[in-house]
Length: 492
Image 1: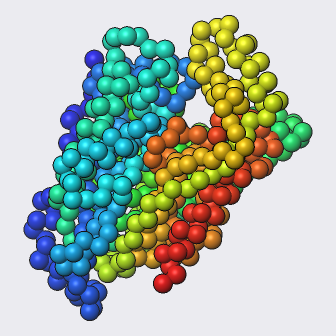
Image 2: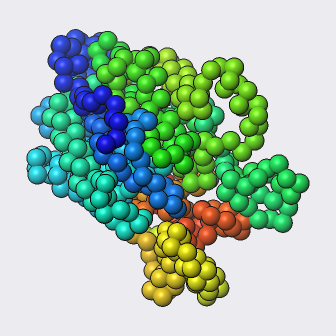
Image 3: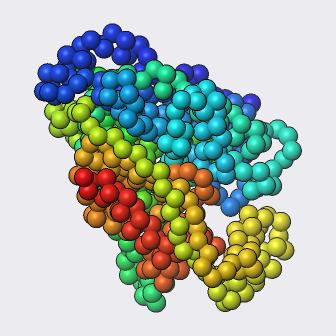
């Protein structure tokens, strides 16, 4: 059995608001002249999605069975509703999970579970994102060769996950109360572009940077820390979403359940703001990013030793400082009279058409790798290319659900990919919103990459056909459609 942490109890805003409702109404009226109190209703909850049995971990090509828990993986829920008296105007239900991606039909199953208990709400306005930790349970049968017994199977874990998350959503919705909201921008160096470029024009994910052929790092790094906070009458934050353009994979290769840097980050933020704080981790556009160091490893190691911190603790320290600095200012601008509009869109993106040469190269790799059963996952990965080549037709599109939300002066937009950072920067720059939160790995997808033209030219994992059902043309279409949807909410 896994040696687990003490029970990780779900918490909602129930109790935290019960004694302050009257005070909050007075606070809102005093701080927002001429506007009604309770225009914005907020609920939150957190639940453990950590199994109490050994479990296979997702995120690598080889099979890993976790027999211990280094930190709990959790699902963090935030529900928003705008109201005019007794009339509900719009809503958003956002769930952040310490998982590698949101696999298969997980989001649909969560929606169905919520709909059974809350038939009055539009569950299409519920979305689930992953923090992209590579030390969380596998959720797809057949992805790895697993023993038949001795650990929880992927289908069993998904059933457990769906039940836990659905219950947490219902709890958060049921206990929603009036609250104020603020948004703020901080900065911290967490993400590093992980693609090294060489003299011959080639690129490599995590390529060596200490050899003579190294010429630079391929792309941009986004060090913004976007902070969305919800406050009670005493100006104490009770829920918070923190958007970092970096996947949670500092300890991605371990054989233990681990929420990566989000666990340490939540601990520090709760130490700063109170143990009842609910923290949603949002991963911004970061398909070519990682917390792994590409440069200055010796200097960084020395600083860690001097501070007496692990890498996870150091990353959390940087985020905590950025959030604290941003919120010190933002708590002077808490609002309740905010516009909430939630659009659910279906975008159609052109697919990456596999060429004859790419198909032949993939088939050659399949033939080579198939000689060793240990290459099971790599064979399946290459087979994606040959299968697509056989099935593709000119004009094929990749159709997925996207969400765009206006909350006051900010925008929140989602996508299902590991979206290269340049695309996120385009969306932020072209958006009419005062501040734009980009959330990747949202909805039903297998966590596929969406690379730039520059990355495809450089090649390597994350920018080749096996990694990407959609290429740069689809990336630009995603940006254009997302920006158009965001800006439509500011036209009036």
